[in-house]
Picture 1: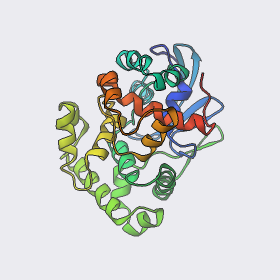
Picture 2 (picture 1 turned 90 degrees about the vertical axis):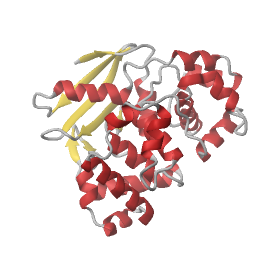
Picture 3 (picture 1 turned 180 degrees about the horizontal axis):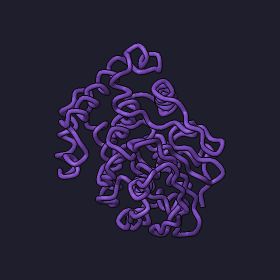
Picture 4 (picture 1 turned 180 degrees about the vertical axis):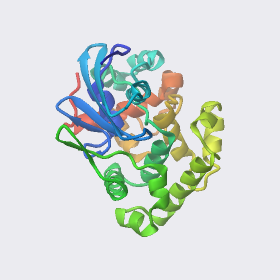
Length: 293
């Protein structure tokens, strides 16, 4: 099916910031097609997405068994197809060190994980380790908790359900590379979600400070982790996760001052979270992993 999106739109760049690293087992991209297996349905659903025009995506959905509309809504959520960022665009145009990058990656949209659970797991696994180390740990965890699904010659790994991690032994999770502290935090999040002590609606109905406060009631989740969960999981663009070594390196790469970003935040206003995605794209561009311009 053909799906209209808000132009300008770049599927390749949006998928790049969703994936973060090329070895991502869940969000896959090959030859311009994004593929993913979705859970939460009666049986696994496989979606495939290609950009068919400047403001249009071609979306394929297999296995939805009458739930195409729900699967499509998740695709729209993950790929930011309806998001606009006029405040960021205006602000970036007036920041000399950011202007060129913003122009090269024009059309990137803020992605979102399909579930709060996935957002929490990613944020916790990526605490205080490099993106590469965290990516490797997450990949091993995903492989340990599920089996791949074959689709058009591509092995797709669905993100593990809450129950899969809750039922896994500490030994299994430690073998994947998770520390005891992170395992304990993940189990606390799983329990909160399974019992209804935490859900996405609770966060949606709160302002950003209130949502951060709620997340931080879970031991092991601090302000940085909460900010990443809300940015990448709920699309809260008024957040910029601070104290990130990758962010500092990216700012230096572009000529920005890592020690004086407050004027930049003020210029980007309530959409400063888009800077986080742009800095990620700057790192990928510097390594030759994406095409810009």
